[in-house]
Length: 269
Image 1: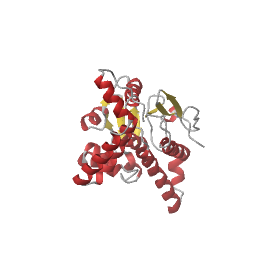
Image 2: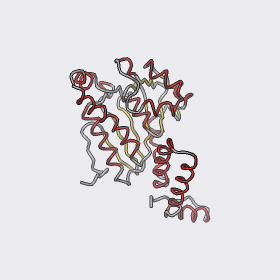
Image 3: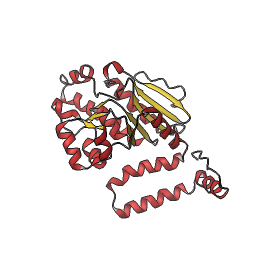
Image 4: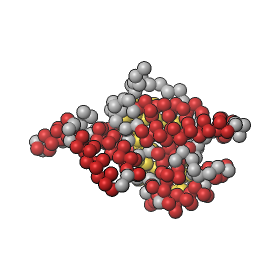
């Protein structure tokens, strides 16, 4: 069945879709929005479905009740994990990694709007987003080491050093300490801090949604793909994709609007 963002009703989080912007709200505020096996799976499936629906132009990811996400639910995930065999544990860790893979694979830019607690898998989801806005009270912790686990979780050892640098990432992953909002801004983890978090995140998503969605999807893809390319490979890849962009109607309309001294209207074709 084709994914329809206008009628989608997820079981484990809230969904809103308006003017090309989808908003995913983690909605267990009484527990600071922890994840369960089921919500991991539904989030993963949702981001994969977005790869096939281009009416969604941008995504805002947020939490309800003044917190973003406290990570995996202690009773519904952590407890059961202590009783699983190796194969069961590997199925779980591969599923959690697959959520990051789905977030990176979907063509829409994802904006994390983070306030309050942002820990464990919550910190990973913020990390895996394309843009990150935070309230001044945001406290972010990659706290795996506090429960006897490594910092090598859901891509953290690859993504985090690329965002904030190796030494800073190593400190956070070894200690599990909180990164304050001010530290995160200075280190480049946050794009900006905001006292009007959701409004600003929604406005940024709206600006992106009004832009050339094909071009945005290519930018997102190349930002990730070019990690492992040589300079010659990068230049050739960007030449190929940019030549493709130059064949879109959005490119033609932008030129015509510029020539007429008007604002271009992008339609994603």
